[in-house]
Each structure stands twice: as structure tokens, then as C-alpha cells.
Image 1 (tube, rainbow, N blue to C red):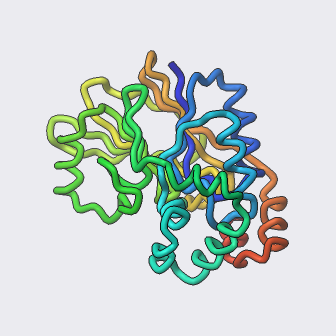
Image 2 (tube, rainbow, N blue to C red):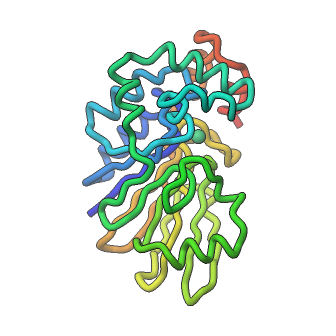
Length: 244
Ligand SMILES: [Fe+2]
């Protein structure tokens, strides 16, 4: 089975359309979204409609938590807060209900999916986790692979024989074979707002037959999204961060 995992689309419908085109060409059997489908970007309603039309499963991101409970707006910096307020105004009631009902984690296809950090946090950042906690979490993980988003970066953490090994996934499209004796956390990058120094949309494909992980870099019309961010009156930095 070939599984595509997409994360942090952040209302960037232009990027997501190209990723869907790529997914359609890659013989994918199932797709799971790691949350933060909205926020920052100019077309949250279009992104949610695409997710729902294709019946993709999605977990709750920290941006969706604000949709569920606007009290969480306090957690965000002023620019993110402004974009979330505009996002809430741009989403239909049916899609607000849909986002509010997303689960904190999903277990499917033999893997775990969570926005921030396993077992079930939409808000913890992987780079804030101390080594001892990382080791404990991975030792206790009941699934061999957990896919996470939230950092908008690509990374592979392997746990084997009680030791942690960080494998870089930066540097373009590539494949890695996973050891069936090891456990992994896969940080799946971001479709709509990468923070790895390149502007392509990123997502990952896991093939459970070959036990391989493929990193996909998908070019899209970044200027189209930038224009839409300005037209929507969203903070300028959300546009500036898209072109590297
Ligand atoms: Fe995010």
C-alpha cells in the first residue's frame, strides 16, 4: 500500500492543487493530513473543500484548535492571530463544524498520525523535546511509524537498540529504506508554508511493501499565492516567507 502524508497546507490552495496532481500521478492508495489545513494562507475554504471532497482523513492542528475554541487565539503571535481571525470569517459554518470535530490523533494503516508530537499532542514541537523524553516516547510507541507536522520541516528520527538517530531529509527529492526492526518519527514538511529554505510544497509517500519513504518536492506558482495573500489583507510576512 502506498500512503501519502501531507501536512500544514495552511490555506495555500494553489500549492495543494499541485500536490494533489502529484499524488494522482504517484499511484497512491490512501492520504492522511497532519493538520494545520488552515491559517496564514488565503484560501482556507477551498482547501477544506478539497480535503472533504476527496475524503482524506485529517488530525487536529494547533490552528484548527482555535476554530474549535477561539480562546486559544491568545497562544498566537499578533500576525498569526490576525490571519486566524480572517480565516474564521472566511470559512463556512459546515466547515467550522468539520474542523472542530477533527481528532487529536489517528491510528491507521499500521501508523500513528499526530500534528505535534506523539502520542497525541497537536501543540508540542519536536525541537522542544528533550532527548530523554524522545527516547521514552519512542520506546513506548506501539506503532512502528508516527508521522508528525507542526515544525514545517522535514526530518526522520530512528529509534533502534535504545538509541536515537536523526537522519536529514533536506536537500531535495529522495528515498529512504526503513528498517523493519526500528521505530520512526517522520516529520513530513509542509505543503503550504515550508520553513526549510526552499519554496516547493513538500509531502511524503510511505510504501509499506518496500518499506520505503519518499520525499516529494512539488513546484507551484508561489507568486499566485503571494498575490492572494495580499488581496485578502493577510499579514505581509505570510507572503514573504513563501519565496526563498
Ligand atoms: Fe503549521
